[in-house]
Image (cartoon, rainbow, N blue to C red; front, side, top):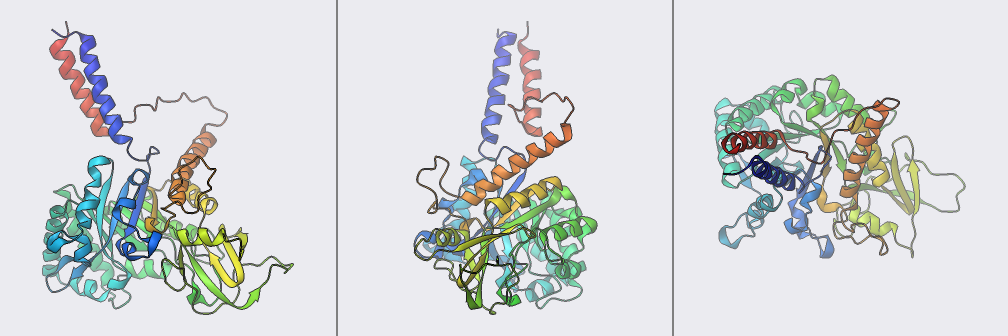
Length: 451
């Protein structure tokens, strides 16, 4: 007969297994959503990003972007079958990314449908007809379960705009409500990416209603400014004198009824580029500011090759260029770094600006942070210092993780400052389900084997 002490050993083993499973991801308890733009695999040389380049321990949720809509069948379709599927000797991206959950049991993997290139017209027509919505909902459940995803992320850009209709705002809510009803039966996640501009929010989203049915709302708090403005500006300003900034977006969403514990603040791992009509030289005595007149098209990077856009993996290499050095500056109002070389300007995010955004999100008690997109971080570690002992790759993702931990600690210390509050033992951070498992095991073991 086993002794009570033997029974307790069993409980310790069970507890240890639960901790080990949880320790495959971030320990701070906040959401970190990592979008992957799957077309990044086609970028040249060291810019090519595959599923195997991902560091899942830095994310709590991974979103595979994008799938599309088949308007003839009212169903989800792969936009790149050779890359996504296994049929016809395909590379099986769906399978490879969901298999990560075996080694990283904390990870949730969703499939995103939509994106900028998909537009709005087909989605608008789909949601306008109840039978078509029902057909899509049923097919979505089948598709997500067939490929072993944990959920669906809606990236309709945007209801009521880009070929949409005024009725999209209500019809999108109805679609989400019907999807949630069907997903709940299979314990599937339902999330959505929202545009951050006030004009988009007002036209596209019944914020309070959507907040009831969505598990998380991913706020795309970037692209506030770009070369289209014909003047330099921060890609993702934390604050500004107008409504085009992170602080306003989040406060406005909360005012409209978005649950704070479901809001996820989007952070860009890329920057925006500009071309000035005249070169700005280092000899200038006046510190340059954002808002300088620029042309309508920015320059492109060698990896992403998109005018007006550069991934952080391109930006950090540029800033290390000693042959043609950049002048680096900090814009205090928007909490944004920017760099200038001759006629070229880059506004971007680094570890300092990311900390400011993360701290704001933690003070607002938001669910966490989302990034677009992990494939433009310095995932190869090409910009790392050779004498640095810290991990070499994904510097911005690691900055997010560190900033969350630091911000939460600062907030906790500010609350208990001047007061004595006993620390809880945090060495055994178990989920609710894990606690229940340990409790049931304890009852069974002690009840059966006690003397």
